[in-house]
Figure 1 (cartoon, helix red, strand yellow):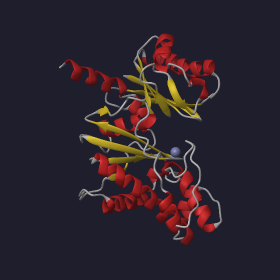
Figure 2 (tube, helix red, strand yellow):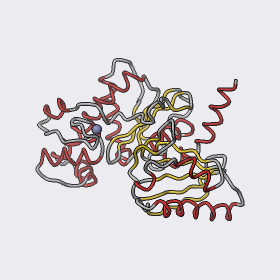
Figure 3 (cartoon, helix red, strand yellow):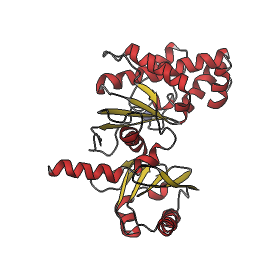
Figure 4 (cartoon, helix red, strand yellow):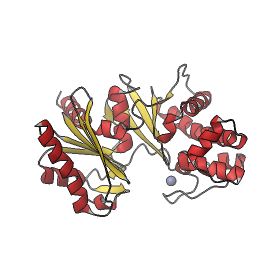
Length: 310
Ligand SMILES: [Zn+2]
């Protein structure tokens, strides 16, 4: 049995999983973003109730939107100020009295897809999140890649999509990371809204845009086509670099299977390698991959230590 938390900016999800990966209990509570004591209480309350219900004391896996300093274990970026600069795993281990492992939520999504989702049994998995913005996680041979800075898989930052924007008559917008031209501002639901607003002069939600697109609305159709092209160009570069076996997609846009399929075709048209079957596909755990992956962290860590000792 495993306990898992997915800590988001608006809610904390808790899940109890059995060894087969079935979810036995699932609950959600609002995130009290600025209050560390309240944050700890949310976790410990959920744990005590589950301990009582299941008569067990399982290890805990946590996924969150941010990175950890590999030297100190401190949270180096997070949308929850209550845990910023805090040694999340070691402090919680001391408070909760059991093993705690913490990883980035996109990495956890990638792990869930690689271990039991659409990328099961393949070697190189580049999982992407098309949510509000853009994220990603890489799993190779069942383990995460990278680790020197604690930030990885962030293919939505550091790019310059300005050329694509200009070709489509769009004006660049600044990214939250301080640069201009990052895909993050364009490759998620927020980006689809920017595109539609700039080409039509009408700012509507991404849900209204995809509804209008399904109804063959001309502006929405153009916005979706530009959106797919922007994402596909940057993704093609990642494919050229990684040569992945599978690119599972999570986040809100993953539920739009026609859009994912269009991105997939555009990517496979642009890459140097030959991929005869779809690469970019909706994840099996597009909605709860962070939580599911968090529940697999201890299993991954034990495989890693076995690999080291052999
Ligand atoms: Zn950026």
